[in-house]
Length: 338
Image (cartoon, rainbow, N blue to C red; front, side, top):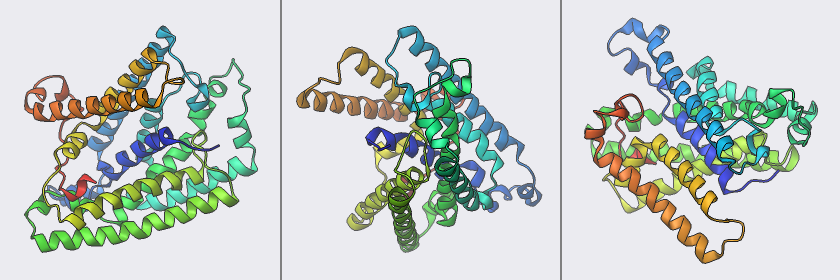
């Protein structure tokens, strides 16, 4: 039990994937070309989602092989012996196809409540947290990663519910850029106010569950973790909103645009850099100065990569990145860069 900064990252990536899910695009977008198309099963969307999930699964498989061959340090208590976060994200994206947009809210509540009941009352938490593993069972070897899928799916559905109920898509529509400044600010303040209430509710639930039900646990991704990481992300959004609205910033922030466009590549590069740091530096005995310099260089490296990718996106679109990672992204407004 207990959480740290690293535990915020994995939950935040699940949330960011859910906030702009193509599965939850407004009906008018889907019916723009054909009114009948909006009510039909979108096979192209399913195919695209499964394709993205397969890419994530492939990266996860490569990571498993690489870490085993390099004898890289691993903490099996995070996801298990073979499992990793790429496999988790691939599974969550696939499972999310089973949850319709209108059912995202009830699904989040139902999954979180049922899963927490199993953790607290049916001994599932003990099973996840105990050190014993049956070496003849893949499930037992990877119990943390497999069991926590329920929690991550609940988090994904909760973020989808927030995005839809707050009409987050309005800030990302193409026609939004042509609306008047007054209308933009009205939408922004309206969304800011809704986010305040939603964040407050998540904080109350997170603190209440942590105190009366079960302590926050990233290992099992229990209900308190789901609302805790959602509350933190919404608080970040509010802080960015506050800075933008308070300073009356209307222009786009280049770094945010770059990360939005190539978020997955930045995430991959950051993972590789983490491996390089852990392989070349004994982080357990590193001093404060060494840690600050390393982290600063780390962040500069990630920011520089996204900058170069964004500046050269036209050339890159003709090469490998044309296949998937930077293609056909939704055009974001300045407000949506939060």
